[in-house]
Amino acid sequence: MLPTLALLLAPPSIAPTAQGGVPELRIDPLLLAEAAEVFERIARDDNPLWPGWNARATPILFYLPGVQDALVNHPKAPEGFVRVASPLLPPGWTLDLRDGPTLLALDGQNTSTDVNGVRTLVVADPLSNLRPQLALLLADARPVPEREQDLTVERLAGDPYDQLALIVHEAFHVHQEEHGPQKAASEALLLQYPWLAAENNAGFALEGQALARALGARDEDGAFEAGLEWLAVRKERRARLPAAALAYEDGTEFNEGLAKYCEWKLATVLEGQSPREPMRWRRGFRGYADLAPWRARLLRELLGHCSGETVVNGDPYGSGGLRFRLYYTGMALGALLDRLGADDWRERMFEPATTLTGIVEEVLAPDASDLAAALERARAAGGWAGLLAAKKELEQRGNAAARTAAEAIRASPALLTLDFSGVDASLGLGFTPFGLTRVDAERTIYGQIPMHGQLGTTATFQQESVAPILVDTRAKTLQFALAAPLAAGELARLVGRPALPKEPIEGLDLALPGVKLQAKRAVVEAAGQGLLVKLAR
Image (cartoon, rainbow, N blue to C red):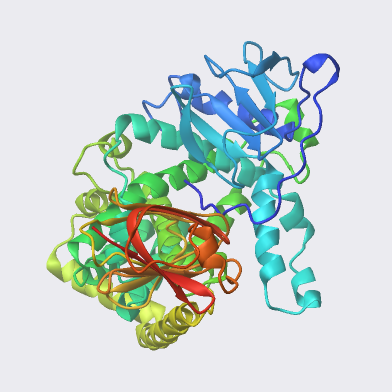
């Protein structure tokens, strides 16, 4: 699954349907052509990307939030969809459209979901993927002329090869969910991962270098030697990690890394083939004669993410960098196994205990002296001392930035504090793994999307706008700034009383600026222009 952000800009208004009530295609028509291009390779028994994967039965949902849903090859489209014809689709394919409120309301949700009981891959319209990027750019503190330089033609138009990759990536997730539903890592494990730890990040930088050398090697011997260096670095790096962190790496490399590998494999399978005619209408499409630049770009991205030079979502200290890193290491390990001529590794990946690291180690079969020599070579080639010093500085800056961010939340005059120390209920949050900042062992900041959460059966909340949440597991508090301050006396009005009672309120239901909060029983107190809600038994 690719990274997602909340809808930060207002969705476009809904236009009427075409005359006679039959909807017109309002998503980008070239999405249909791109889907046909990819499915020509993956919707068959002899799938060249992954043995045993036939995507013929996988329907597709393309959507533009608030505008239109377009279902391709869905066996039972939900109520309200209208079947239409499209010359961009191959014979026998179906297209069902529905205008108005869409099945997914947020931008950039490239994922898979159940649509009327059928697992369906989801791809957002290019405008929907672009809109959150522009929202981040608008929120950037740099001067306008500097931000304008980021509005390149490439960024605005998108890359047709990226779009093909996105479709195959999300389609493979449907296959993974069917054949290995328990193998993806729980994102809760991310909370136990030391993603700012200096030695771990320096080790990841060496891993990226070794993998890039292995995939760029001229012969199998060179690939084997560089692969051995990668393994030595990984084993030494992972010896310091807790079991939860190892499980997170293995599960994310399986889920996201192998989907990214399918992108790499697509760039080899398509090379030299002839595209379908509609693809020639796509801006930036140059055919498939030479796809080495596509693979070279993936290797540059591998290096950028492993080194930390590529900053995810504008946050060099958060969890997004780690998670994206595992997309690329998983991709590279799959490509390395291909390069080394490993047999049946793809079939084995759905075995419960099988990991990419484990299979590569089996293929390389090193002894202790091999690993010691390889680690020394990798550290010498990568400049270990300088890397470690830089990562220690990054760790210090990150810790300081996290403390500052936590203090900023707590200093808000319109602060909502939800105190759950008085009830026996665990906190469950719906969050994005790309929006975490660790303050210390007890405190974590969750951000980037409007959050929702619940405390057992005692309370629930739903943010309506983005506001970073500070969770303190020791104090058992949850804090974030309201979207607007509360005027004097407004809180009493919101609870329907002439004055705030000192005793707990039964059935609390508050519509606050930017958030809705419900609790079975709670004491409510004014706190500046915000409030304190103490959950009670």
